[in-house]
Image (tube, rainbow, N blue to C red; front, side, top):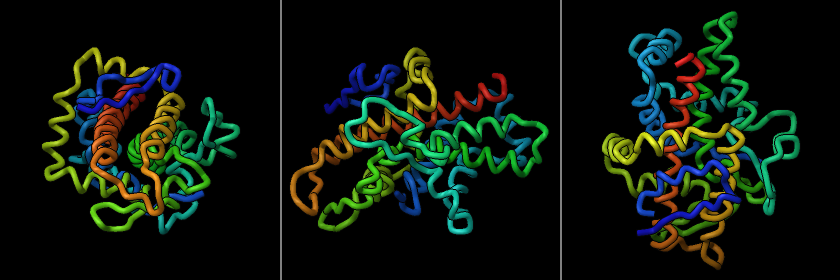
Length: 271
């Protein structure tokens, strides 16, 4: 079975566990299904007291997946939030440099960190803290979609035309939604499958690092897999080998996104 190799030079805090057998962005990111999957995985890893704190803020009976797509749903009304969903890192970069890659702090990594701080601030109005929480849940999904740390030159894959099963699309749209649509019949069944593949030791390893480490990881996966495995030609016809490697990478990233989101929320609320 296919394995995705992440070398130590690429990712010092690599999560080797989730290898299952192996500038603008579009209106959606991971697609609504992908964000729900990340949130559902995180929900299963929340400390009970952290879950109670979440519901005190989000409302009785609220779940992480119920707020996971809010940040996309409000983008038309709040266009200034569009840059918050991604970061562009130049090809050939050896490391993440927020001064270079995130001018003015207007990118996914800086905003996710900012929203963590806002949720903690008890003196902030509940509405402000809830907005920050909903952004944080969503951006932790975006952060793990490799092309949300793609290249500015092609707008994170939006400028690359691809052919998938005879239909033309863009590379970014393929990774956001088409990849999941092709492989997921039951998202809850996939969540159960991904959760079943996590050992305690692997989960501990995955939680290591910080937002900057995880952003750099996504950038390297974008370079090595999303871009690096593309076939020649224009438009690029994505074959079965590319689709398999993309799907293994997506499962890996969805799982890590959920585990890390839960870790952030548990730590943020002291558990």
